[in-house]
Image 1 (cartoon, rainbow, N blue to C red):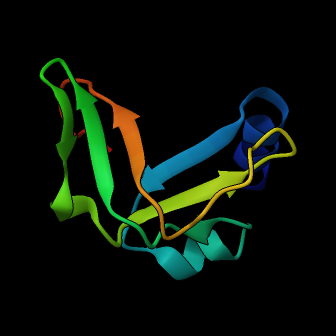
Image 2 (image 1 turned 180 degrees about the vertical axis):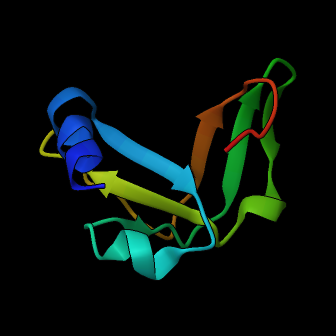
Length: 82
């Protein structure tokens, strides 16, 4: 996980994932997203309440200032959205 965190910090603005293992990821610097979740689907932005409370983010030096209680959205993809 340390290596993956380093790759995310080097190459991306933000890391995000859905998990039930919050304590595990928090040990590597990930933070819980407390706000509501959404997906930007082909039909527009849709709420994903089943993912509320499961999202964790890894901020990088390029991450904008984030409100962890605000909305978060991911791009649509086949399969498990988050």
